[in-house]
Amino acid sequence: MAEHRKKEDELNKYAKQQDILLRVSTLFNTIDDFIHQLSEVLSVVGDGLAADRVYIFEDSGEVGNLVCEWRSNQVYVHDYFTNISYKAIQSWKVLLSEQGNITAQSTQALPEDISQLVERQGIKSMLILPICIREKAIGFLGLDNHQQHIIWDNIDLHFLKVVSNLISHAFDRHYSAKELTLTLENQHRINHELVRQNNDLQQFTYIVSHNLRAPIANLLGLVSLYRPQEPMHEVNKMSMENIKIVSYQLDSIVRDLNEIVEIKQHLIAEIKENIYLEEEMREILNSLERQIYVTQAQLEFDFTKVSHIFTIRKYLNSILLHLLSNALKYKHPNRNPIISLSNEILDDFICLTIKDNGLGIDLQKNAKKIFGFHRRFHSHVGGRGIGLYLVKLQTEALGGWIEVESQPEQGSVFKVYLPK
Amino acid sequence: MKKIQTVLVIDDDPINNVICKTLIHTLRFSEVVHSFVRAKDALEYLRNAIESQPEKIPQVLFLDVNMPEMDGWEFLEEYDKLPADFKESCHLYMLSSSVNREDMRKSEHYKYIRDFIQKPLSPVSLEDVQGGYV
Image (cartoon, rainbow over the protein chains, first blue to last red):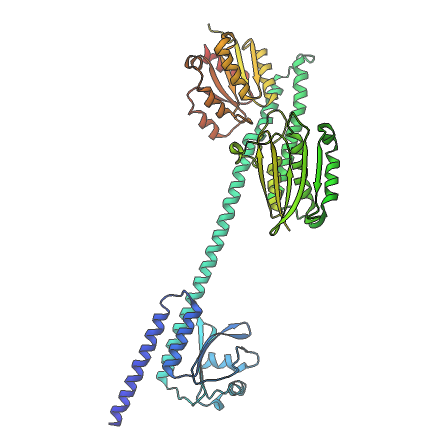
């Protein structure tokens, strides 16, 4: 009869273990919300084995940190360690790797450093199993009992080994998935960067085919017109004069290109500084003195709302200079230019507004071209059409952007947004 | 033999126009060369000539691609609206500094473009134009 009873108990225990294993496996079917799934698993294991506390620690160097835990209703206030230092308990790792587990039906059987740790937490019985990824221990699974001394037999140990293997496997999958996501993100970033660089290169080819080629064709044409046999021929004079003009054009195009490349590659590790706007404006107006005098322009600026801006002086100067000289260059033929500058704070940005009463731009037709390469909008004035493209690049390099509103015959308003 | 009397050069780059004029005069390609830095003005000239001054109608026209305000392609849209007999008689060439295949390919879609000439205009290309006209 006793024999019969024993067999029945064993069978019951076995059935219970199978049930736990089935539920744990089901929980780890997918790894979506890993920590939540781990907690569920711990509660299944703890409940099923009548433990008081089940927990998982993960190693980080010389320290093990609590990842998640489950506590039975019986356990009250206990100041459990949420991290343990392996330096303080040298025998922990030694036992885990030599025995494959740490068991103590009675804590006295443990090495002193561990038994001290265990007793301090009021633990009567404890079982620790390593969690490994590809045979390397990355932490441990633990079961504590506070009420009674549990006797773990080989079947129990074997069963818990299977559970810890399932958890190990879940950790492995979790980290692989994480790594995969990271790799994918990285790939995506690289892809993005490649597309951007490719676009830059295409634009560069575009400039070469459209903008550098034009003055070169002119040079070829002018040189072929030259008549070496008739030095005094008037064609020679014309040819030489124009060769000079084209050479200067070529030079400035190459300079512009160089500037573009420098900004694009962020070669200029310029330092940001606090710039007093009014002072900076006076300096820019000085360099435009002649154009202002010739056009009889009226300029007004109001920087009372924001007097200083923390940014790269070189870029800010170039942005303002380009926009102001454009406003003077594209003045309306029937009136003197009136140009006003003001600024304000909008969220995290300082908005600089430059308003003129000049020719204006037909944005319906040119919206896409305006900040592009070498596009000129007016025939009567010279211009390499690169200024606004540079302005756009520079505002972007400063972490901002530029907008334009314009009506033909009315004037234009440029808004430069720079970070505060 | 048909003689080329008048040539129109439409290009916003004045230096190119000087080169074209000088070369055409030197080679006695035609008697008159008119150049326009704005495509719109050239269109106005053509409309006016077709309407009331047939002696001013050009036999050859060189058109640039990239120009501000009205570019070469936009000019062609308007050009298409001109009388058919004029378009049959006038030989239109694209004259561009572009070495971009895309531009050259695009010009193939236009019925009235005879050819795509790469700048600078040269005696060889003028000879071809002359050959095509006779």
